Picture 1: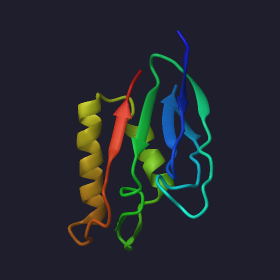
Picture 2: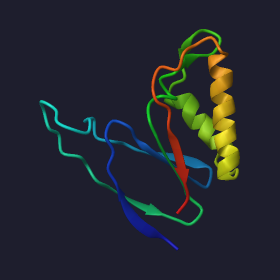
Picture 3: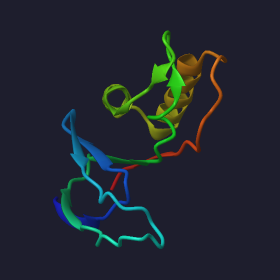
Length: 122
């Protein structure tokens, strides 16, 4: 059964995975709060299904330095990770995200920012 809902984001997209395909719903390039230039937030209507999985996240994971050359994790690598783990139970996904993060920083790099990854199913 299909259902519709709305998403509106500030600077960070929403990812969802359906049938092993990741879809990115772009956010508005505008922070939350008072800014010199107010940009209206765009609403996106999303048609979702029972087996879809959604991910909301802060930029902390993606912007984290690490790896063999001290580079940022980046969204491309994050998307691949989500595609690898999305079909696992949510508690297993959490453990895999934490393990992946620890392997990325190698105890050599400080955490730069808050890290939040929120996965949910309709």
